[in-house]
Length: 508
Image 1 (cartoon, helix red, strand yellow):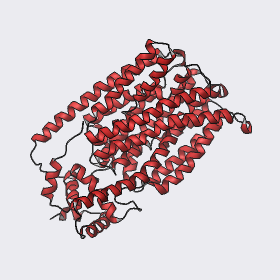
Image 2: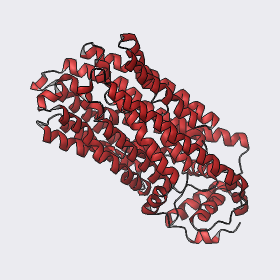
Image 3: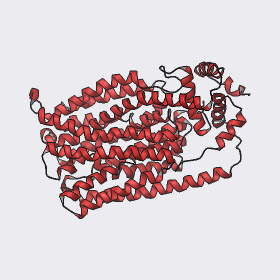
Image 4: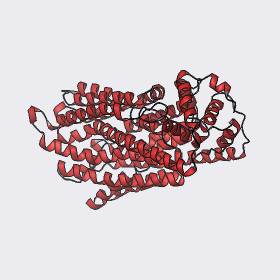
């Protein structure tokens, strides 16, 4: 095997990795059953180390963002002297920084050597800012806190999805991403229960309103978890300190086998080059638009306590009722993702739940009965079941180079978050308590989402047909380097690696 051109361009870090790999390859090649057992042991190790930490952070991430909606039930607007439009602006202004910063944060994450430190610092920062929200005295103070909160929080969800894509194959990613997003479902349930306890018991303690304690307590918990993150989260397959050299080699090899090329950036794949590749890809552009209208349709999530309050119960009962649909959605979310991984299908596993959400919007617009409206909350919650697969579909469709994938994930989720910004003004208090106009907007957003998703599916089918007809390509530049690196990881010739590369197909 001649890969001198690649080896000559190795950095000092890559040279060290090459030594580790050569040591591993000097051993006897394990039989297929041994490989399966070793791979399962590695994924279990990752699952137990990576997933619980990400879920915990995501629960705190969403709770810190959604606390304003919960605090509204206990005098937040009155104490700060906010009008309806000012309250809507307080909700929306977070996304003004949160949305654009997701792209930049993911570009930075792809280049930093220790994502555990990077993500941990961001968690600590947003915990501090969230706690400071509890001591604000006026509209200006809470606006400053919300703008600042969006910056470190922007690093988490797209960053977590990208980090998962650096460890798990396309057939494993959907289920793990859904477990992560179940953190949102749990936070809607657990967060409501925690908020109910704080709002009920902390009113007047130390002379502070209960809603202030809500921000302070959640912020302090987040800071502690942020410091834990720095020691628990993994970094990348080539440099995670608590993996052996053979485990690091296997982790890199698994991802290389998944697409027929190494999951590395070449010297030409800078962060800005990745952004340019992503933003000029029509598939990424459609994903961005699809995500935006999808988030608009799901904007009811932020106002879920307010919607539940229209059923006419006390604050505590309202928050308890609001928790129930999300517990159900967490279960359907994991089952749906498990099926998506097993079948390799994406479109129906996403859009079917949007159809259920459409029914969830239609029912409360058609009846005022308690049973129908409460049941519709479960259907609306179920519409979020396919949500984690949006970004997974992006990662599956833009698998290489990592710089492009990181930018594509950031662009899709960042631009999509604008839908939440628009949604902040959709659920107007003056349209309550029925919110029929708000629901009609959400319904139309779901319909448009399904149409765009169908367009993406047809494009991927067409590109797979083109790949079927394609001969073995003559590779050059960064793509050739990644295929050569795949050959080095596998211990095979470049020609054999090229044949495997030709087997890659998009999932839809």
